[in-house]
Structures are given as C-alpha cells and as structure tokens.
Amino acid sequence: MALRRALALIARGSEEMELVITVDVLRRCNVDVTIALVQDSETATGNEDLIACCSRGVNIKADTTLQAYIKQHAATDDGLPDAIILPGGLEGAKTMARVAAVGDLLDRQQKAGKLVAAICAAPTVLAEHGKLFAGRRLTSYPSFREKMTEDGYVWEAPAADSQLGRVVQDNNLITSLGPATTFDFGLAIGALLVGKDVADKVAAGLLYNQLLCLTNQLFFPTAVHRRIVRNNLRRFRLVTFDVTDTLLEYAVRPERHYAQVINSVLEPRIGITLLEEQIGRSFGLCFRSMNQKFPNFGSGRKQTGQQELEDESWRWWWRTLVERVIVDAAASSNCHNVPSPLLSIIAEQLIDDYTYDGRRVCWRQRPGVDEFLRKLRTPPAGQTLGIVSNFDPRLTIILRNNGIAPSGEVVDFVLTSYEAGVEKPDPAIFETALRKANLLQTGPEIKPQEALHIGNLCREDYNGARSAGWCALLVNVPPNEKNRKLLTAIPSGHVFAGLPELQQRLEGSTPLAW
Image 1 (cartoon, rainbow, N blue to C red):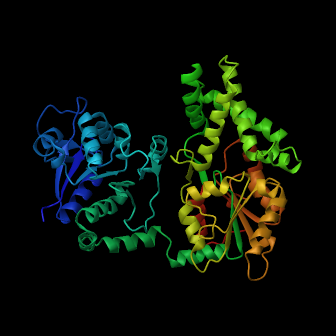
Image 2: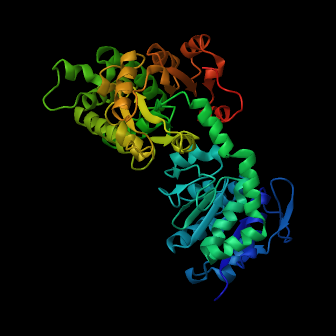
C-alpha cells in the first residue's frame, strides 16, 4: 500500500513543539510528511534557506516552500495530501491566515473530504479563510474559545480520558489544545491515517502510556482523590446547581447576539443600525422594569388569570421585553417608529435562538462542568443531583442541548423558578427541590442539612440555600458592588473561582469546613 502523505505547514513564529512532535510521531507511523514554509511579504527573509525562526527562537528548516509543494504535488485535487497539519504559535498562525494560498489549499482539502488538523492558535486560520469548517466541533488554545464560538464553531474542551486523547475530531477535522497535548494530537492523526494498531505501537515505543499514567497521578484525580472528593461531600445526599454562570455561560455577550439579529432585520427594511452598547443599556433598564411589574418571567400572570388567550406567560414576557428593548434602543438613535411586525419577527427569532441554539452561538458549558458532574456520578458517590434555577420552562431543552441531560444520566431533576412559583432566594424553592429529590429516594428522606447548593450569586444562591437550612458554596461570583458587600459575611473557604478550583479543593486532604 502506498505511503500516506501529510503536509505540515510552518511559518516564522510557529510553535516548534507542536510542529516537531507531530511530524516525529507521524514519521514513526510511517507517514510521508513534508514540511512546507509559508511566507508573505511581511515574513519573507529574502533568501532561500527555508529556515523559520519559531516562537521560542528555535530555527527549523523546512523541506520546501508552500508554493513549490503546490506546484509539484497539489496543482490538482488528485495530488492533495492525505492530511494538512497546522501548528499553533500566534505569529505563525497570523501569517498563515494572511496567505491566500493557504486558504485555497485548505478549502480544496475540505471539499475533497481529506483531513485537516490544527492545534493551539491554528484553528483561527480556518476562521480567517472564510470560516472553513464552520459549524463543526473543535477545540483550540482556551483563550481563542470566544472568537471561535463567535465565528460559528462549536468549541469543546476535550477530556483527557476520551478515546482519542485531548483532541476533538469532527469528521475530517482534528483539533487540539496546545503544546502539552501535541502527543495526543499526533497519535490521533496517525490513528486516522494508518490505523489505531500502528498508532498504539508507536505510542508504546514512545513510553506514552507510562507518561500518561504518571501525568494522571500528578494532575488528574486517582481513586484516592475521588475518595477524598466523596469524603468532603459524604454528608450530602443532595447536590443542586444554579445554571447561568455556574454550569452554563453565554457563548457571546447577549447584546452582541441581540445586535446581530436586530440589525439583520432592521437594516435592510428601515435602514437603522442599533449599537451593542445601546442594546445592552436598554436591556438592563427594560429587564428590571419587567421583573418588577411581572416577576418570575410572568408566572404571576398565569396564576392570577391574566393570561392572554393561549399565550404562554413566559413567552409573552420575553417577547414584550425584547420589543421594549428594541424600541428603547431605537429611540436613542432618534428612530421612534419601528413597525410592530418587525418587532415580533425579531422577538420570536431571539426567543428561539436562546431556546434551541442550533448554531451554538448562545450557550456553552463553563470550564470543568463535565468533569465535575462526572466525578459526582462516579460510583459509589450516590448523591442525587439537581438543578435549581431562576429560569423559565425552556431550561430543560437548553440543558439537554448543552450536554446536561435531565434524565438521570447527568442530573436527576430540574426545578425552575417558573415551575416552583417563587424565585431564589425564597427558601420555598429549595424546599420544593428537596421534595422533588425525596420522591426519587428509596431510603430515608433527605433532610435540609444533607443538601448542598452550588451557585454564583451571594443573595440568590448562597443566602437563599442557607435560609432553607442547606449548605452552600459559590463559584464564579460576579465582581459587582452588591456581591462584594455580601461576600464580607460569607466564609472565604466557601467561595471559589470556578468548578475546577472547587474540585481541586475537594480533592485536597484537608476537610472542608461547612
């Protein structure tokens, strides 16, 4: 069988580890790898030495230039390599993003269904060349997460114990995080090109599995660590979570997505453009006003019989809010007559976007959520897991779309304030959650002191749970004035930057003081 061929691109400022390790691993897999130098007018050296000074000052000599490779091997689609590899390194990625020949080659590779592999900063090259592979699942260096999401990609944080290692594969696209995950990256490419058996033999020869075991002992929870987690939580039979900014976060700022949808309707029809800043300001004002008049997403209208025909109160609430936001923001631009049909079109679009989020531009999991929930689910942990959130009935759909299925596989139940009829911090919503949890029990009932709530707001989550007799912890607390004042009365040992930091603390040898 003919050797599989791969093309690895390099430019000034490319990340040397991500290039050299990947090329080394693939050559051990008996893949014919060519390293091609990418240059533009800003990075051309004026000589033909084929040397690129990489991100840490290491000089690497390429086999050829990209132009020469295309002319010799890839002038037609029949000559395309089996894989194109893009190493990271911010400066190198920027050069590759500027060179049209790179974009043309990647576009042809994508259309031919052949493999493209990008690591660290390199996935941004795909976005810059016309959003190649848009809509696909991928990963990158974490600081590019927001950019990739805004450009229409589904960003994921790969688990260390996934089948291909710390990479994300979506059909003919492979991506990985950064330098430390390059062995995973190279072996995953090798497995797809020449088979997993060959890649596994190469991994064994590299002592990769032994290194992975050592790394797991040092950085990932062992059975001992998991026991410590359970020991720190063993007093609790019920653990519940808030959602917004605890388990999920906005993939892009709401005012940005609102602006995109609003302007896509208003600009071509009535010629006005609303700024993100105007929309954000109007949203804050209108949300507070609606919440005062019709609290809890309008659930009170339903309870008091004020429901209009068959309209769901929560949908009426959000539609009214969006329309008021548009009218208020438009007034700031001296436009006082936005047609009602356009308001309705925009409102319905935004409601559906934040419900179904088919393009994954509205919601995403916060870092560490999958691993944290998985640890709590690892036998014999045995806690009942639930959601307690100030939210409307769409929450179950949103959670399922973001990998938190409320069916017992990830969490056991979801309780929204709309369903409960009261919002946090009212202790009644926590009492309702306790009743729901006890309906799932086969043994003794769970008592309030056996319940723990984890959220991000001092008043709603921490104080609300404590007022119901529960224990509580905080993660990702917003740094606003209200929370800063309330935090002074909360033990510092109950406040964490995020779920990964909380997990690290739970895995420590010192018991948590409740």
